[in-house]
Image (cartoon, rainbow, N blue to C red):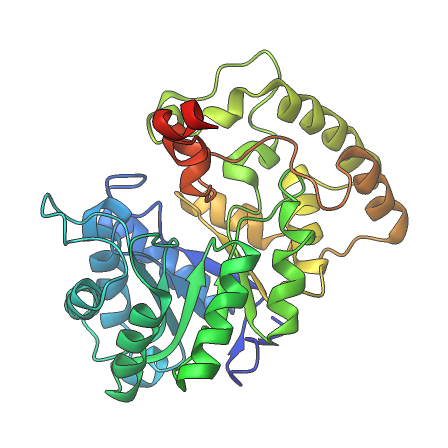
Length: 346
């Protein structure tokens, strides 16, 4: 592995990051196999493990904690451990979001599940429209100063909110987000327009998620085939999108011409972008991990990259990704319409 600096933190990380979303009930419920996958990734030179409290409602963090607990202490110190909080972790309306009240508790809960005394990178999983970013950064700053968190980051923030958070941190002398975790793949290039430039402008590291677009860029899902029900259950409806399926067919032909598997083409494309620090892979089985690792040394020439640009133009998404962030006004009609009384008076 050739390591890269995570933004301006000075932390060296591998170009592939092991994502743990598929460990637990959401993916692979076999803890022993999941632990073996984690150890295999570490043996291959991957030194970043990324999870979140909401992945299988804490089970993923527990599996990661077990895996790291089986390592010699010096080996555990080599791992850059990242997790996230924001999504609901119970029926209590305060067990979610990015308020001080919740983030302090969420960190303590994650530390317990992970079996560690510190988290190397703690990320806010999504923007919280109900909480001032100053409140969030103030709480996270205290967690950094206490030694429980080493660095903080955001995940799936729009460019405007990335910039706002940087400005607030500077004005209020607070710890700033050092990383951003946006979606990025050949099929999902929207972040090239403004998110990646904002990340680079502020010296942030980019840990991009879904480089294989939820499995669509593995070649396992083709036009005319029904995606597996397990993925449909967890919100992968985009895998039925005809525009995506058409693009996949073109990319499969391109990969074949280049003598590559579609998986290796897709991963090489993502890590080739100078604004990307590391791409998060989410294997559910050992075979999935080995397949991705086999292409770790693949690089794409300009001819292949130009052809990819023709299939999916830079800065565009083939179609909206359901797990990406949308501002509340896009989902709630009342936020983009004047009240009836005001419309009548106009």
